[in-house]
Length: 250
Ligand SMILES: NC(=O)c1ccc[n+]([C@@H]2O[C@H](COP(=O)([O-])OP(=O)(O)OC[C@H]3O[C@@H](n4cnc5c(N)ncnc54)[C@H](OP(=O)(O)O)[C@@H]3O)[C@@H](O)[C@H]2O)c1
Image (cartoon, rainbow, N blue to C red; front, side, top):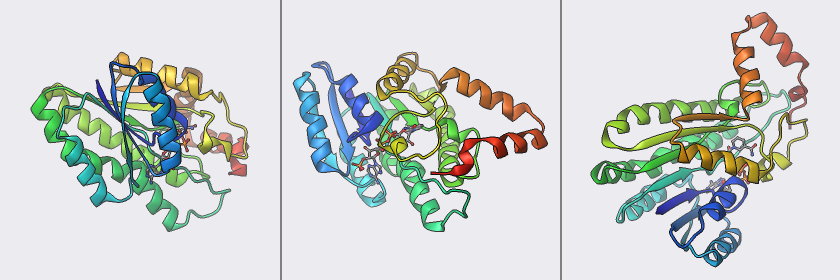
């Protein structure tokens, strides 16, 4: 299989690359930090995979389009759109620049890369697009307005893309993890409920991909709590948000 993974230099992307590293797979790994990506690639090669690395900033949309065109020269079995950033604000007003950066990295870059790839997938009549969203896309805390908004936009995008591409034999999946131990969460200064290891996160994500789950949110207990809270009257929801540790921000 030819599998493309963005944000493969650390955390979930790195662990996904290592999970799929075998002599059956050809991996294309994308990220900015060359030293980290080269190290991940070497470990994947040791496990038998053929690996190509692309050092790129996903916020360079013109660059992403060119990479998308280049990648489309050969069949693509799976593309995992995992590159992402988060920023928290301890209750303060979100600076516009943070909104811009998060929307670019977590949302707009996805379409910049996919726009040239989608016609190729339609032509080949198969392929999987996996968008790594977040449980934070389902409920917006006052300390993570930009992050939640960017991931909710990604959900809406992936939902529409699913309906558009399903008739062409292409599967579009939206994965919404809860807290996972990675560079992203190591900077958090609040208690993270149901925190999982990267390995556990990857086990669940790869299982969902195998099952071709169109929408998959985990861990289930955290997802259930969010669903229940969303059913409550607004006044009760306000109280719950007020009492959570999240108020402390990052
Ligand atoms: N950890 C969690 O609790 C959690 C929960 C839900 C969803 N997620 C999502 O899971 C994904 C992976 O996050 P993670 O937890 O594994 O965090 P991480 O360890 O910080 O990994 C983020 C990855 O994204 C890449 N990246 C960030 N900005 C980029 C840019 N402008 N251009 C290219 N690559 C960029 C980073 O590579 P370089 O810095 O080398 O470019 C890195 O490989 C993200 O989309 C995140 O939102 C994480």
